[in-house]
Image (cartoon, rainbow over all chains, first blue to last red; front, top):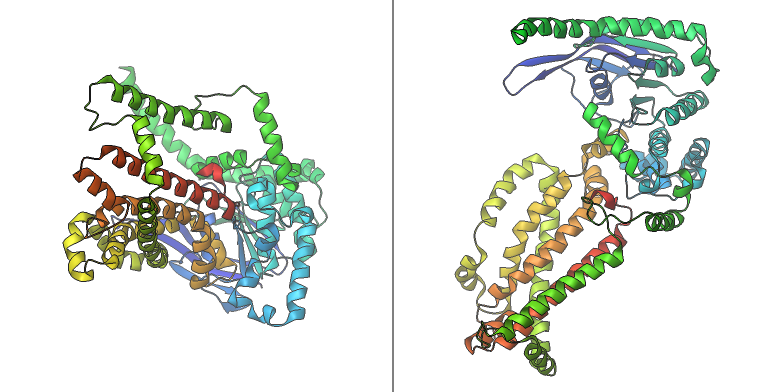
Length: 280
Length: 303
């Protein structure tokens, strides 16, 4: 197993010492080369979980293992792609993608010339693969949203992370760009054989990209169901229209609707309680 | 989440250039100019740009109306010409003073005082501000203290300055230093805090240590804002010049104004005031130009 999550949970304490459980203890594994998506109603704690795994937030309990070793805090072996564009605006596309070479954690690469050349060659081919070949020297302010996000992905992958974490990376993009990005990510993940943990609220996106989907409940988030996506590694956008795809999509959407229904019922009840008074 | 989404959308719209545009930034900007001239210019759209020539014309109109108003007022007889000289009188005095080496000496010494105090303040405030903005613990230790000192009026410090630093150049430079340093520290710290936290987080996930993140990311990302803070503080430094030159000065623009006032030489006061304004404006423009050149990568639409 690549990544093992054991009873990881998160409880927030507010200023008034009230506690909110954002994430119930969850456990799951991500295997080598797997593409696992986390879907769930908004506010279910799936992004919180991703930040915990990235080490950007402290879990209230539980632990995580990467290649069998316990990890805490952030580290370069767990790359993260954010929903917002997080490129360094003062660096060009190429410099952004090579940013980690500036860091002391990479002395093993920068010390040997051949290793460094190797790494730089890898960055170039990564950028070419993502259609950024002509934009090496462009600054982020000149790039479209989709291109910025591609650079962010390239930057994370250039670091050779053991697992790539992605937090709704295409959430801010328009529908068309989104599909292009999905196709690109699909190709890229197969090509690089990356292990990816992907958070999204788009069920279609999750099915299209993943080998496995974890459906989360409403807050406090826990895993409702684990779904193995029955499609092979070769996929094209046409798949989204296949009956088997649509059936799976319906199944997951129904599951999510049941989760949101509880909230909705509460609203409805409140509405009924209030209404007689307003009529009088 | 929803708020975040909408922010992204506006950002998308601002930077939503086609890939062809991105390929050649120069072509993109010339295309923008062409696009602007095709559409009718909206002169009164909130926070929207107007053509550069229009801006210049309006600035000229602003200066010209001040000049005309002054001219009318000084000739109207409402005000004693001893208190308000006519523009032409000031102009002649200007020509006269420009031929006098005293004026150039005053400019030189005042410039050196201001710049000395300002550079000293910048040299110390920049690292300190970066630390305060980066670490809450350092902020707790130093920010309330800085805020407290900032509110002590600088002229009230003159006696202390004279006791500490005598009545020489050092006292004057130190007064300008005190006037700008505390402001600048807080402004720099604010600029560091304005850097999106995601940039810090993404750096951590790329393997950066906190020290590296501070040096390679926070400080670097805040640079355009910090440079702008320097521009504003240079302005403060010039305003403290007159205060500084209250301390046993024998030359300098501020000192000279005080001396002219003693002899009721209002035309000369006007010349020096206009000169101070012109120096300030020139420095301001120089700072802005340099900022645009050094930090061409910054998204100026957000400023």
